[in-house]
Length: 496
Ligand code: ZN
Image (cartoon, rainbow, N blue to C red; front, side, top):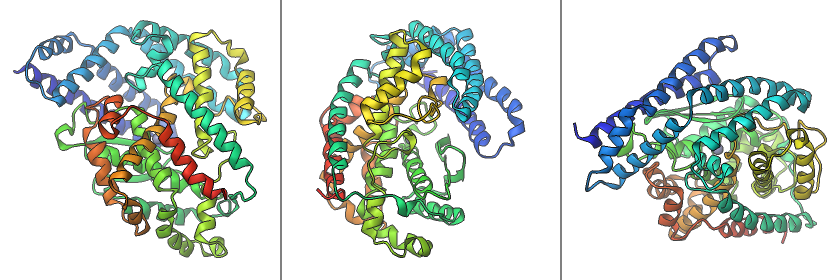
């Protein structure tokens, strides 16, 4: 058989197994009884090992070599070879024992993290964290794909990105965010969130969240929404994308924006060109680009005035007691409060970047500068005060809030890159289609979806993020678009 065809088939098979793994994970988070974890863990381990073995096999190496020699390869074929090679080389460099050790430490450490966070007791989590940092350093040393250890880890999530590149972008972003937050803080006409912090019937929230995804063109014929502790998106095939949301009865935004965020991820997954359905390229371009789409729908669209011109009357009708005394404008402003806060996942879209910068700087210190894990809580608090002007009252609201570090390092930066990519892409889309926001006022989002599909979604993983952003906007990632967007949106909200 033709080498290219054989490579396609082989990786389509791997993709099929990965979809089955996703199904196991989705079921575990949504349906599975708590007591059934042991059996599921066994199944997941089996499937992961199977995938690892298949990617690592010498047969793949040979197929890649043969395919690379072919002439007249299409863009898509070249991309498949690139991805196959990357995965194969990674898998070959990392010994099975190290993979096993990381998986085990993560599983045990996650359970300990939950207890430590609950009791705000860093000391019980510390040994697991220490171990994971050591394992990830070893992992990065073995992989050795970037100019530094931390760059190697960042590249796993944002292919092509390095520490220096991210640091430069973040330093531009940081000074502008600090300036904006300072100015907003001096406003004598600040919005407040009290409207949102009332009892909102969970059943009604759930119904509204389902109405919203329908209007956003989430295709219920090939997708569904459920509830889970932490919202997530999971694709179980090219025609089966599931999202989840969570409902807090005393804080309306948790469910609504959780839903819109995950719907943004899902629209991306549902928008791949049919040519790449079921293939290894049916995936987001990078974590940063994937996050740009969830945040674009959640913040740029979902927290816009135009969006609420359509939705506020519906919300008012659904929650008449809570909202009868408030205008659409007051509600809109309450959704866009900017203020320093301790918890990342509850942060507004402006101060969010500072939460990421804090983690980015600490990850660098842990992976490359031998930061003593004992000192982590104290360093967290000192840096937090420098960035936000407030100090977390305890470790639960400080260093223990996120579980990410019991898994890996280099993932956090992609969240903030998502805000920046999103603003730059949206700026271009809006320049080409200035009337789009008028659609939102009518509850109409299909034109925006078509634009994003055409520019971003259809390609899946064919391009690298740096290529895609240049192809769409004509320039490299530039944080100025996010800063301009933030100033234009938030200064008026705060009466400037
Ligand atoms: Zn996301």
